Length: 436
Image (cartoon, rainbow, N blue to C red; front, side):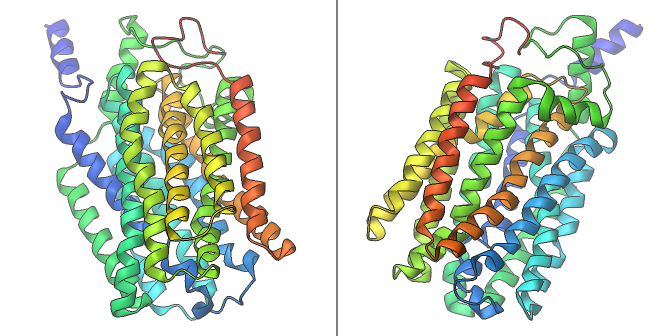
């Protein structure tokens, strides 16, 4: 009787996209809303920063709102991962939407750039909790050999929304003014997302626990996992393993930092660069939207590609393609040429971004997978803060934004070399031995 009950309980938690299609789609809808919230900042705020009291040419001051966002989101990624292993993924996601509520009101009432910096603390909490949980939940309910595609879909939905959000708020700002546009757009997005999450999402932690039991009884046929870590490690053990001790995890983390340094450049300095070259708000919105939407849409292909050929080659190629796209901005002129550069950068991001996440998931035990993803995402999103300080200093010290593009490209090239030399292939069908 007990055996039959156990089998019946396990059957409820079958992994696979087809078996969990409704929840898979619901999670994609959630990350789309998360992307809209951060997308509203990708166009209007950097270009109109002088209206909030940022002196022209004060790039370090301008980048301060990305510093606050990066440090908070990075830290909360790890907290979210650890917390979700205790209270569940859905509750952490809802906490993320609750944290987002002050953002539209702070932007509407902002008296100085300091208000925007403070609002981005709440944005960091929202992104750290909400986006993290959409990734973790998809990984929970999918098979190991589908996780490239699953993370590709997740990041497609999120970053396509980033591009759409930037473009939409550019148009709305022209019609209603920047404050009213950002207030209405963000508040509506947060409210709708929270309601859908509360009423329609299921908790996915039971799927992870079912997978853990398969590991324990020897019935799991997936990838090999790192040795030298306990079955139920504490926070410090997971953090040090992923950050420093394990060479493949370490290589993945540094690549994550590099890609967010690049995204910090494209978030803040790319719109300013285009504005200085004479493009208007809507034109800038289109160029930056192409970056986000190509990044998003291409991940449907690049995630699937990594399920076929492995994760490592697309990641290394992505770092170098992204570097090429960034450098090309400084060589070309005109909206069409910059749009092509933005598309190249989007392809580079698509090659590396979902496959870094899939690689971490490949070699993480379900008992501590959310914490491992949280650790990786901690380092990755701390790259926003590192990039904001470094590139803000480079642009201000050199009195030339284009120098920041060259520094970013160099970082990406070096990161690709470190990834090529330091990481093992993690795909479950290809890492026959324990991953080093």
